[in-house]
Structures are given as structure tokens and as C-alpha cells.
Length: 178
Image (cartoon, rainbow, N blue to C red; front, side, top):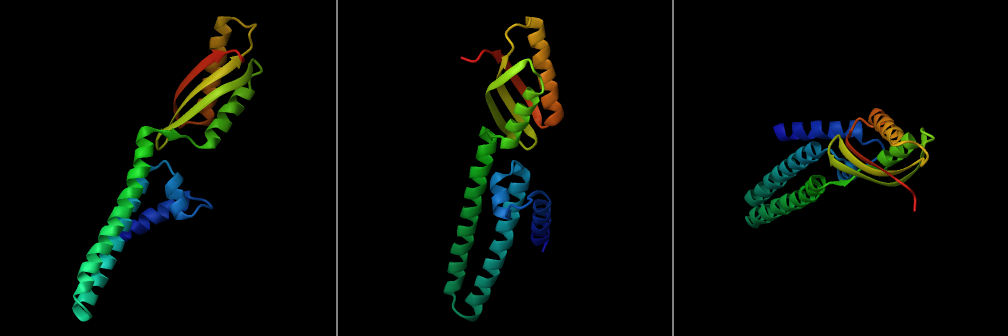
């Protein structure tokens, strides 16, 4: 009963965030590891209890072999959920690419300053839920002073921070297009 209530609460939270995505699609793409783990654990518990209860009833009323089959089925559910969670959490621990929207917003922030000629390279890494790191090389106008380059970079970082509060770290390097 408690596991079911917890799973319903997790699914409700997913429903608020997933938009047009299906639940499994949302769980695959979200960066919210806590929600993924909580949902997976509760899903495994609810399904496992339902399978075990059904298997025990069938073993009692039909054939004792259903007890063993139920144990195997519960084990398969646990292995499937554990595999899914391991892959998802591993990718978040090791860092995975941030959403494409992050790169788009960074490029738009650069386009707001005429002294930034181009974004040469950008790497946006999701460090966890709500934590993104970006590293970028900007082609900055070559005729400005070193002090002005620093001002351009600082203003750019402020625009990125305003647009994307989840960007916690920025490593910006001036460069010249080859």
C-alpha cells in the first residue's frame, strides 16, 4: 500500500515534468537521478509484490510450482530495474551531454555581443540535476585590448548565467578561427 502510494506520487511528479514524452522516455532523458531511482525502486516493489502475491495464490490453489515461477519472475523484474537504474545513474555520475537547449542558449548569448564573432567550440556537460558545466572557445574581435577581451568574456558569462541558472561552471577561452 505504501509502495503504491509512493509510486503514484513519483508518477505524478513525472507527469508534471514530462510534457509530451511518455513516462519511460522521460525517465531515459531526465537528469533528475533522485526521481529516476525513487520511481524505479517503487515500480520494482509494486510489481514484485503483485507478482509474488499472485504466484503464492496460484501455488496454493492450483500448483505449487507457481511459487518457484513467481520467484523467478520477481528476480527478472529486479534485474531489469537494477540494470536500467545502473545505466542511468552511471551516465549522470560520469557526466553526459546537457540538453541541446543549453548549447542553443549559449550561442544566443554570444550573438548578443558584436565583439564575439563566433562560438568556435562548445562542450556542455550535465553534472547532475540542475548542474551544468560549459567549456567554450569564442572567436573574439581581434582589434580590442586584452582588458576588453576580459570584459567581453565576463559579460558573456553573466548573460549565460541569467539565461541558464543551472550552469554552475563556465570555462571560456578566447581564440581565433583557423
